[in-house]
Image (cartoon, rainbow, N blue to C red; front, side, top):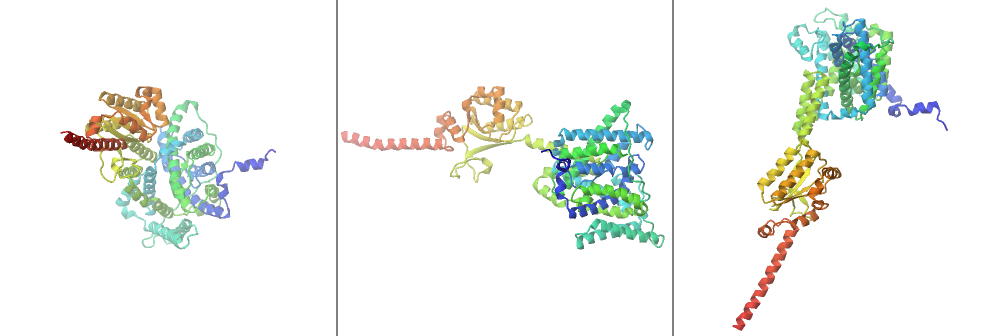
Length: 614
């Protein structure tokens, strides 16, 4: 029976549809309202940074936000205009056209279309695995650094200071200290009331939208102060101001073939910027919500949002940290919160633009401070500090880089540091000497550093376990370890390598074992292996090493390996050895003792006989 159209459509609905209920719809609607209020001043400010008319920031928070939410992976990430994208776009396109001109706007829309196509291609080709190289330590440093940036940028509005557009975060701090006399106490009072209202609502009314209630409290405070301004220490509190229309018009992002080469390079750079931010923000929010993020689907959602946005007067968008975290904190349960945010933004601007224009900037700054504080994970920092100094330094370096560099560069730097640390660890695989533990009834082979007390090794046979991959980066370290064993015990000419934990070797690793084999045989010993993995055996077969080594030098059990190798040891050395490491040693000792005992028993009889004869 052919399925009807409705069933086919239902099958293509996203997986989170099962989470939708009357309760989640209410929570998403409240979170969406907060998101719409937060994006109003941000959209206008970011569009100005990008060299575009203010309304383009509002446009970018509508269609791209809806598309990214419906087709992406995260339940809480809200896409739209961001500081990094705006600055990068202006820096790359302003040399090609006058900022704000029709030609400039056309270039912006064309680049946005190209960015969307590239993002979609990355997701469709399933290259999202690249996002797996962003380690938790990098993510922690990035999140805390971004939280600090949010707080620093919010200071100017919280204190009512006039700071030139484009001022860096620490430039804002400098203005706070140099222009402290210009601090607007009214704006600061509004921020304090907003924070108190939000924190009180979260403490005593946990089921209410505490951030929205705090914003309403700040709104009321600003309304009162603006009506008594110039009285005493009170001054006018800055507000969002006139809001342009939010309904984005349809556009045609024409792309000139003459400028295609330049646009392609710019789009590639912006793609890296946008995707680096998007996946990092999605993962940062997912760490708090416990959701699993599908990087490929997230890239597809971001790509489709920019493709669609380019046809609706939007410039490059991606996940916004200072909207996504408030969205989660406000209680959003599904991506419908982002859809509601966009719809409410259009509706609110159309219906009550004058009222919304009176939202105090200090109240919004206070909300961002609250978000910033919630992003700092001090417990996680302490945990990483206890577990690994290396991971702690990576997190700290990423945190510092986020404060002084562009966000995508900070993420890239942290990821490079993580990969370098990983390569350093993997280039030093464990090469640990072992002995049969005499304190263990089963006499299991145990690394020397795990024994309860010191135990001797066999003076002729070295037992070593290799733990990790022996690839080109690890060859020098493993070789040095094997040579150090030889220097410490020159009579240990035979080497048995436990390779069950040797996960991988490459050509350089295979050549290293061939060299070790030749050198061992040249000094009168030999090389043996216990349980190599399939990949290792296949590499050795392809290089011909197994033929040169001999298949009888590879064993499936330690007992068989020791028993066979024992036959090739020097009996003279065994005779004077007191270590008695292996069972074979003890058996030989017992046989020697029995022979000695038998000889000593026979001698007295002979002497008696001789005596009698005499």
